[in-house]
Structures are given as C-alpha cells and as structure tokens.
Length: 337
Image (cartoon, rainbow, N blue to C red):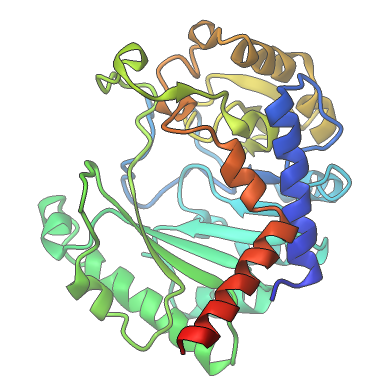
C-alpha cells in the first residue's frame, strides 16, 4: 500500500504530465526531478554520452549546493539525483549533500560506479539517509573488464556492493533501495543479464537488476524517423526535470555531458526563473511545433520517438487507477491461491 508521500509524488508527476500533454510553454509546476552534479571528475572511464574534454573539471561548492537545495521544495522538486558526469563519491562532502537533501524533505538518489564504495563511505551514506542508489557496471562479465585493463575492478565492485547490502541488512533497513544497472553497448531482443552474475548477490536483497544502453544522443546511429513506424512525441524531460552541472549552470539534457546547451545559471537565477525562462520556453515551443531539427541538442535523439502514444500508460499510473489495479490483483491472487 502506497503511503501519503508516494501518493503525493504520483499526483505531482501527473501534473507535469498534464502540462506535457497540453504542450504548455510555461508551467506553474517546477521540475519534479533535478540532477545535481557533485563533480565531473571520475576515477574510471565511463561509456555514456559524448564527452569532448572541453568542459573544465571541478567540484560543486557547498554554498552553491545549499542555495540550490534550499529553493528546491518551493519549486516543487521531489527527487534530487546526485550525479550527472563523474563519480560523486569523489566529492568529500557527498554524505553531507545527501543529509542536506533529506533534511529538506526531498528524496536523495545517488548514481555511482561502485568502485569507491568502501565500508566507511557505505556507513556514511546509510547514516545520511540515502533513499536510492544506482550502481552502474559496464558489464556483467569479468572478461569484459579485463579487456579494458580493469582486471581487479569487477570483483572489487561486486564485493563493495555486497558489503553495502550486508551493512544495510545489519541495520534492519530497506533503504536505500539498490539497483544494479548493467550497461550493454548493444542490446538485442531476448538479451538478459547473466544469471551467474545475479547469483553472486544471492541472499543480499538487491532491489532491482536493470539492463540499459549508454545514451549516444549526438552520434549517428543510423536511425531515420521517416523510415520508422514510431510516432513523434516531445521529450517529457523539458516538462519534468533539469540537470545542473558542478558550476551551477543548467543544461538542457542530462546527456549533454559537455554542457554545450545552457538554459540558465543558478549562481544568478532561481530554479523557477530558469524553468519558465526564455530558453526553456523556446525549447518547448520548437518541440511542440515539431521543429526539433532546429535544436542541435534534440535533432538526432531517439528519445523523441515512441511506438505508442504515452497518454494511456500515464493515465494508468494515476493513484486512483493504480490502487484499483492493485486491488484487482490481490482479489485474483486470493481466488487462484
């Protein structure tokens, strides 16, 4: 049964979908989710996105971080993901960041490669009240790591995550929820995560194993929407989320790891000023008018194309319909039990 916070979050999400369906250029509801980048420094080479090395490396100043989080609740933010590029655990104040997000009544999410998640960091993140952690691994096979010259990392990451799950269990906690995401550079029908890899976490209560692809949004993948049976739907993230790089600038997409397309600067503006600012409204207008090719950020992104209209799936997620659906499942389970 969903608690009051979960239901409130679902209604908040639906309000963003409402403005997306109507393709309003300006919305009274700010971003539901924000990504805040603690640092773009990494201890590993990551396969995501398109990085040309032009963006300076750095760590978010804590005064700037506090300024961003302080205004987030009034802007309607519900979740703060501490990640964009780099490895967040390298920021020495990461546990303090998590704790500050939670103190404002927001959910704190973390994305990490897991290689630096030692016992000390694990305890600090548990103490800080982290809500969800995604551990991203480039493969579910050790051999793939060995080919990249990362022989010891595969077992290190598995051991770190296993120890963290044991720490969580020892404290009688269910949070943070832990998802292990396996990045497959190419995905094909029927592909799955290696059962042998999943077996290494047996009895440790991993909340989810998830398989995904790196987002090669600026590369020519050969996708031609004119030859596809997919339909065009403007990207919902311009109605539901923003991403903030370590120096406080807001980028138009979390895949813009070079920070080439800037919507505003939180050193000078508020979240809501940027959310309904001229540049954000321009993106929404051009996406609404199907002039996506005029937006270099969006022109070659497959995220604008879906197999079916998303409205029905969104309506099905409304709390009232979801509760009816869950109730029907419980009745069916009793009858078949």
